[in-house]
Amino acid sequence: MVTLIVSDIFGHTPNLNAFAEELDSKVIICSPYTNFQTSVGQTEKQAYDLFIATMGHDGYASKVKEVLIHEQPDFIIGFSAGAVAAWRALAATPLKRVQKMIGFYPGQIRNYTNLRPRCHVDLYFPHKETHFDISPVISQLKTVSGVQCIRTRYSHGFMNALSQNFNKYAYLHYTNLCDQEVVVVQDSLANHQVEVTL
Image 1: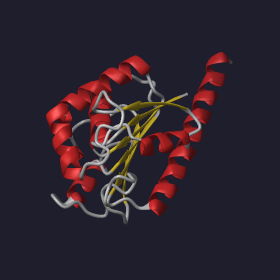
Image 2: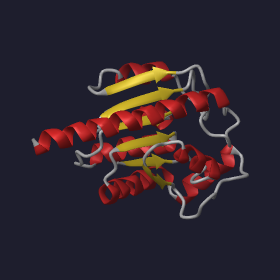
Image 3: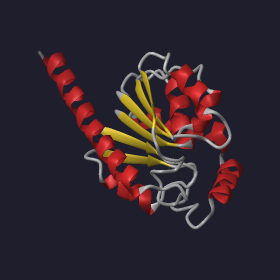
């Protein structure tokens, strides 16, 4: 089984590696940058400015689409801009291999609620966003078949130790949840293989 992690604007960091090591799966990390640790030590605004200058949202969605086609993951976990890039890539890719996607605080998804990924998706939103009201976004996404929206009590960035909104308790809880989903996807794939061979 292959899990694809799609990073946020901070890119492939040691913190993201630590998260990946918690998952009982082969893991591939997709970052908007070619270098490891590109945004470490920067403020969130500096990291966002670098992200926009380096790749931007459209470029990141295209990069994730290429990784989906090449790697054919079974499970995807995306963070912030990475969650939205994965959402867009899944909707634009006719792959049926991906079983599930989990996206954390996908703020820009508000611009892509018309898209339909071809797998089950759980989206974990922060309790609020500073630039827009997430309630109508969640209401609209809840009407999409196979999409579950959860509004957490945490702030945008709660899974990233480089974010000012990092919350270690949320991180531990949702890391465990992601690892449990790896097991569920693995079981689903194993059951499917048994059915095919019978």
